[in-house]
Structures are given as structure tokens and as C-alpha cells.
Length: 160
Image 1: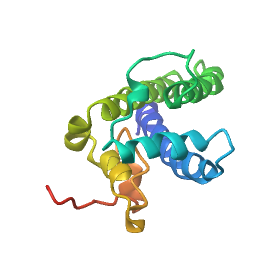
Image 2 (image 1 turned 180 degrees about the vertical axis):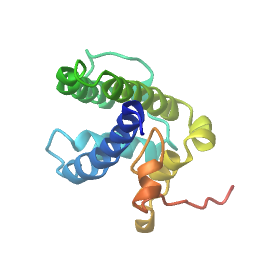
Image 3 (image 1 turned 135 degrees about the horizontal axis):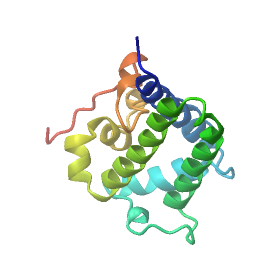
């Protein structure tokens, strides 16, 4: 029998894939909407600076930037799932662990592009492969749903 913890990890990865593809990139196309920060701030900076996003250097909810907006969204996901914690503690614990790991890995990737290229290649490819054929790599924490749904695109770089 599959444990609730494993189901929570899968749920978190599916949510990460769905949110990144349909909300951050889908709704994010609207330059005047809340979700625009992802494409019009975060991606724009990463393309110009080779994956580096200086907005991740300091953690502050007092500065309304990509990182603070990301933290607000993650906090909203935590609060949304809080009532389920008492019914499914293993499932929700896996989700919360995944959210923390997502934030840690995402922040580290945008402060240390060399680390990202080696340890989070799918996310590195997501940001730096700008050809239309590279649209994919929606997962950050683990590429499970990218592989499952056929959206893991391996980019080829001249220095590889």
C-alpha cells in the first residue's frame, strides 16, 4: 500500500507542475496581473543574468519583489491545506516539506547558477533554453511530473 506521505509528495509535485505551467506562465502572460511577476520580472532577470536573480539575496516581506510574492503564495498554500493537517498528517507533512524544499532549491538555484546547472538541470534548462522547442520543465523540486507528462526538455548548450 502506498503511504500517505508518498501521495503527499506526488500531490505536491503535480501541484508545482500545474501551478508553474498554467498560473505562473499562463496567467503570467498578462503583464498587468498579479502573476506577471514570474515571467515579466523573474524570467526576464534570469535570462539577462544567466540564471542569477539578485532578488533572492535577502529575505524580506517588506520588499514587494519576486521572492516576497513567492513566499506569500507558498504561505497561502500552507494556510489552504492547514485544515487537512489533522485528518491527513502524513500527507500534509509531505506537502509542507515539499514546499520548504521547493523554496530552498529555487532560491539556491537563482543565487548559485553553477549549482543549479549541476543539481537542478531541469530548472536551469527551463530558464536558459529560450527556443520555442524548450517550453517545458515545469517542475522545480523534482522533475517527476515533467517526465510523466512528457514535458522534460533537455537543452543542449555549447559548453556541455
